[in-house]
Length: 250
Image (cartoon, rainbow, N blue to C red):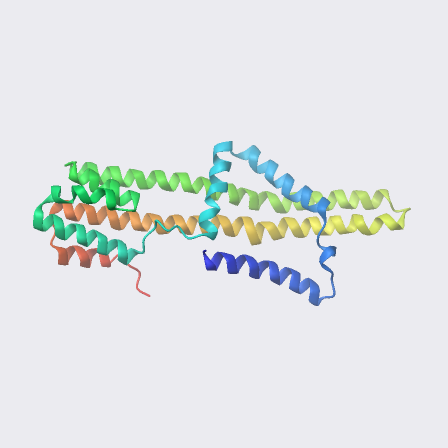
């Protein structure tokens, strides 16, 4: 599990409910089914209208990588060690010697890059191919982030719609005091749901997807330069020092 994402989500929710409890509020005072239906149903509908079904499905699939770490993404230093291991074998036995190693490489981008190198692709074409694949990855995953960013933009406005609907209900029942409480509750709770879901859920999820994407692009850059270094016959010492320069020192 991605501990930071889980802790962040639980901490945000706990702060809202905890603050409400400290002020003497009750849980059922901020749990309103009609308000939830208006805000989340309306937000979902507006988001579906803005994107294709394919984009929505991919965005839903991307949620897994927000709360669960991708086991196929290696740490940068492990990735560099793997590249250096391949570099040593190529320098000792030639480029074709790593052909049998390709099937054991777990990270797909590195596997494809080594395969293209073994196939003898021109270095300039190899770089363009790997960079284009990275660009395509950015475009694809950015769409998922935009789905949640859009939902974060729609939710507060839908919350205002819910608030207005609640106030309309209040105004219609001014002569019936027993109906006023529920109408006012829907009005204010809808606003809380809209603003809260946008800032505690949708927008942070979009940001997390972008951060995960930046990390994967960073790994792609290491792989691209490492594979090109192997193809060019760089010395292992120089290649390791160069790849280590990509690592952000803590």
